[in-house]
Image 1 (cartoon, rainbow, N blue to C red):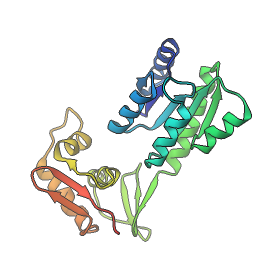
Image 2 (cartoon, rainbow, N blue to C red):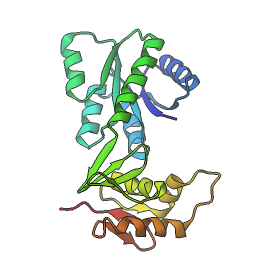
Image 3 (cartoon, rainbow, N blue to C red):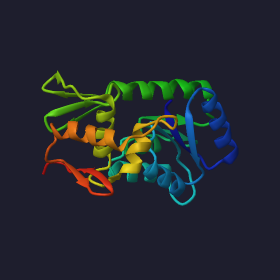
Length: 218
């Protein structure tokens, strides 16, 4: 289920969009100001941002620019009453994927969301040195050859790489790899780490009693 962060300071419109998109099968987190949205983006992974532009404290343009500068590449659609050419150019310049003028046609919004997410799925591969990770299939390749690494091990690799050098606690790994109705296993984590160290022996560090981190090649 794709997860969307909606930033819209008009509470009624915010609730309308939330109700509509949840009925269409999306998971929503909402914010009424950019500071709350920024906080949510630090603690959760989203598949899409829907940002208003005219906001209290700072604009949606400024917020997205901060996120892009921090390495956040989450696809973003601006929803705004601005329709001047300069604003449209600014929106795309700071890293937007699409731009819709209010009043928003909900059916059109749904089509645009699907289109943006579809483009993202097609390009969702990342390079780690000589390796390529297919983020959707959870597969690891080297020189075009599929390696024998389990889906959960690849999911763990993506979690560690996404932490950008920070330590990922064992509790966070358990939450990420196992659903609430599944029993997490510390022993299984060690097995996945051992499998990954075959390919990244100098990159994965065990922080004893805390968790693990991925250190990129210098």
